[in-house]
Structures are given as C-alpha cells and as structure tokens.
Image 1 (spheres, rainbow, N blue to C red):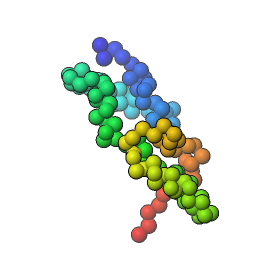
Image 2 (cartoon, helix red, strand yellow):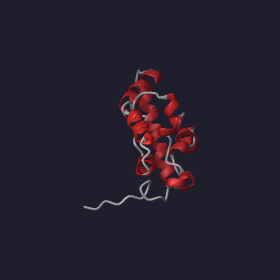
Image 3 (spheres, rainbow, N blue to C red):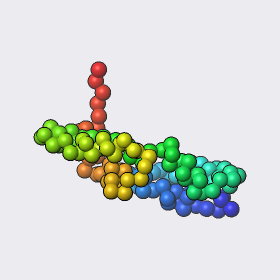
Image 4 (cartoon, rainbow, N blue to C red):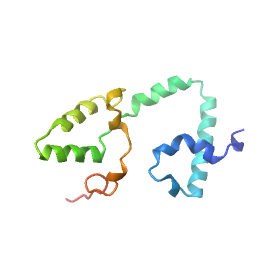
Length: 127
C-alpha cells in the first residue's frame, strides 16, 4: 500500500529538481510525501495512460524558460559586441514546449557558479 512507501522513496524522482536537497527539513519531506501519496491515489482513479498524461503536461509546461543566468550571460556577451547567445536564446524560446535535443543546456537548472552572481540569482527591483 502507499502508506508503506517511505517519503524518501516517493521523493527520489524529484530530488534532482532541488538545488540543496540536504536542507529539506523532515517536516517538508513528510508534507511532500503526503501530497505525493494523494497524487498517486488520484492517478489510480484517472483512466489516463502515463504517456497521455505526460503529453498533456508537456503541452502546458514549457521545457525551456529564460533563466536569469542565461539572460545575464547573453547580456555579458552582447556588451562585448557578440549577439550570438542573444540570438540563440531567442530561437530556443520561440519553441519552449518542443524538444530541442541540441539545446538541452538551456533546460538545465542554474549552475552553482551563478548562485551568488548579481543578475543571475540576486535581483533587485527599483522603481
């Protein structure tokens, strides 16, 4: 039964999405585990195949989004007169829902080097 599955087991497929998984509290893991159990119960009641559900989700959740660190890299190059990354990002973002096998690097999480770099992770809003 779902109640016998440990929270860690349920969360395992999600762990690559977290930047610092070691910082997830026991309470957080318990809450996510509970939510995942409810979700799996809901899926069991749904008469949709895994592949059909995946296609539906991919149709409304873009694979490619303009991440701040990518924009900052493009800005840095453009300020030096090289607009190649700006143009490449524009082309990728034209089709954010499509698989673009040669553009996988634009679908990755923010790299660690960008964590504390202004424009990549730390933003300020001034009006």
